[in-house]
Length: 222
Image (tube, rainbow, N blue to C red):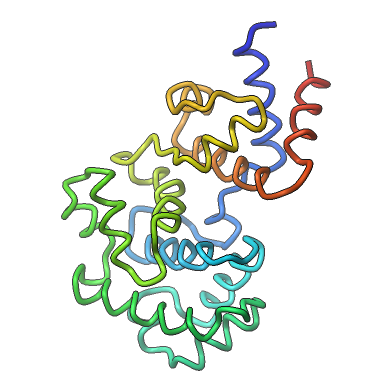
């Protein structure tokens, strides 16, 4: 069996067991439209904190259920409404600070880009590094948050695909996959599966012993 065949087995296990994007988990029907793109930005903000991804996703779902699906509805919600929604998702360590950031984030998006992240992309000229830099202007979105957003948005923004940040590449190495963007992109086969693979690798990197389980499952499938 060639190295490529064994890598395909590992990728197959990752996609099968852990290959759901965080946007999908949060109930976001991702499309190149203002509302779902904004929801992804909110999710990236929540995932950026030192808190479990499960809690961040739950908090995002609570915010969306409370009607905070657009920057205008987020801005119109009271600070306490946002705190309460975050609390229902058990996002309690950072709820007050995050409520403030989400309000400021919505204000910036409305004031600078008319509530439409596609305008941010246009301002960047489609350059991925520039998009990443502009994203970090949002409160709560640092380099980590920008990477999270770009990993997922590449499904609907072909300008940024393929997007693989250092955290994903390091996680790939832990399961025996190449640490290079080119080979991983080829193994995934599409932007959607690359986003799924990235999410799977991040999940595996956060769960002790899971990398060994993935490698064992891949070997047993041969």
